[in-house]
Length: 303
Image 1 (cartoon, one colour):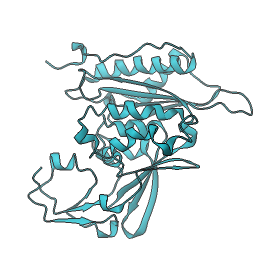
Image 2 (cartoon, one colour; image 1 turned 180 degrees about the vertical axis):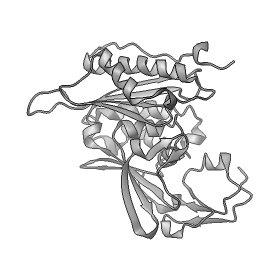
Image 3 (cartoon, rainbow, N blue to C red; image 1 turned 30 degrees about the vertical axis):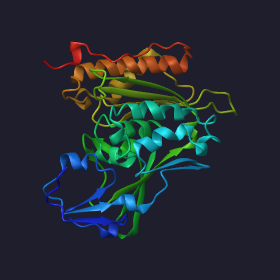
């Protein structure tokens, strides 16, 4: 945690203050772990005083500085009482927070924005916000403002579209996605291991004007180096073969992640398996879907 090259801590959330050698500081759990010899100043976002979570008519705004602990507590917060029944997708919050497999110290420090901006394949806040069609608000120097879907913001392992000086201000989750029925699946090679595969399915509410089923959205993370989203409009929901064909088309073999947490072949096979479980749960309304226990088989391990 010794950043020996850092000489200043500057409380600011203004991109105009950014200069070469700076880094935005939110929770800092990754920054303090890895550091950089090029760092000279830390620009402290915690001084901005942004509300962690804000319920609006359009959905839920999650500040970049919202901690994992604050997000985890939200479903039981009085502020969520008015929308809890209307937003069943809030059920995803706690499984995604649990996917950190981290101590209370990390939960009370690590932030939603920091996890997305770090852009690790297994980043569970990327999984959550991408699956719910989250849109990132990005601030840049000179008063620039732009928005971008999280599924497009993260482009690879520790890669994203944030330019030098830009900061992630907030992620907005639309009410339409929060009203959806959802299904969550996660696998790792050990009980307390990093996610090797994490898929989230979402079945949007049916259109009351024609009675057609809503859009089916399956978001693949952890097994791939960046989020991959499969979208099936009303009237075009896939069967098992159609879903497999869609995965074939959307995820080339070289997009599957490869590290000590799972071989690409295992990640690919588990992606197909979990996607089919999600399809069945959401489309066939299976009241007792097959659970996906943590897989510790040597098929995906390292020796």
